[in-house]
Image (cartoon, rainbow, N blue to C red; front, side, top):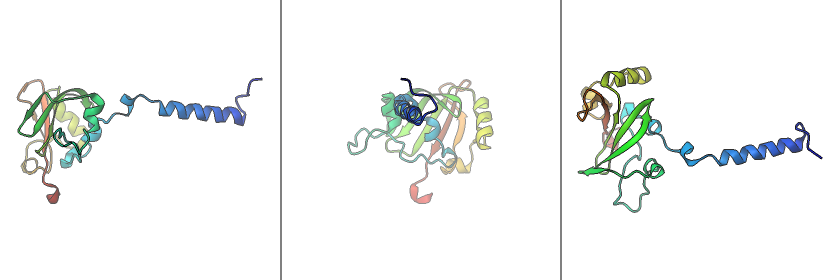
Length: 164
């Protein structure tokens, strides 16, 4: 005999099914996002977002391990990654993260004017270069030298933690 949908037994079954489905969400849906990693970009704070393959005591950051990303370039402690992602709704194609530097950058696949408009709407700032950006207190948004008419670079040089 079938259990009526309004019975306590069917309700318990529906709850169990919901819990099973909730825990069976694909890993990609639970992935670390660039938006989360750059959430405190206005203060140039990135927490523990770095890449240190030489340090076997530190696990690889989930952003890299979830996507199986490896740097295409390592120059003087700065790691360069090709990505296909979005940051605050804008397409992101490259990511620069520190190994030994305190520099974070992301190349946005949109012209500078488009990126500045989006940042102005989201943060109330278009992140023009200033004394605050040079001091590592605020990000800077500039035309990316690799494609100055078609891409933008959002970057921060973090201040030492003692100064924050």
